[in-house]
Image (cartoon, rainbow, N blue to C red; front, top):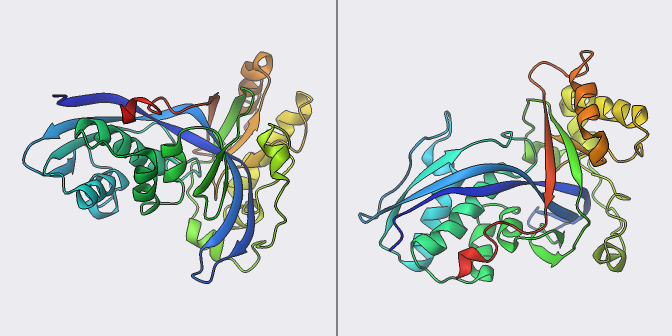
Length: 298
């Protein structure tokens, strides 16, 4: 019997574009996006307990257990399966918190995937995705485990293979309230969907935009400052000016960068006082498939 799983990866994600195409009667927004994982990852440890207790080894300051997505993920699995086992959950955070790159959702998905093995649950990918949807709209994507075109509230997923890319990200060091962004009266809610056949053939992913970006920039000036820095870098290194954009509801912004220019772009961004206080630069490489994509279902 497996008693401990260590260093399970929980990769970040980017929204290559994000369109708000409508709103359901229950208030949830209808979205169109392409999710892509990158190798900027949190790490999760799971240690088996036989007393049924579920807890965090290293709780995040200010996060109560009832709001901790990793704990909630384990409890939902118990609720769904009736499993009598427990787990101690350790989390090494590397993904910026509240940055729109899916750190909390990815952590929750990795707990679901890891416990499917640790507790020998034998749940299918679809079953885990449905449980994950109760935790957040991004969680099913990480369970799906590959670059995806998403609609609905972000839970209707189709594989959307993309060529490998390198990205530069700026985390402004501030969080943005997702509910506040979606509730803003100025938010565009009627974007016309792109042509799915072109998307699924690997084209057009950077021809869209992030409809949440103008609202988030107005709410938090540091996002606009980070985008300005990326656009300045794009001009300097002759990168297409429409490529810098925000991920999710913010605050992280990103830009694809050719491999041979990556180091120079990072150096440029980190020099000359271009970044605000608390901002940080990160680099990421695309991850075509979640590292636990097949392992969790053996």
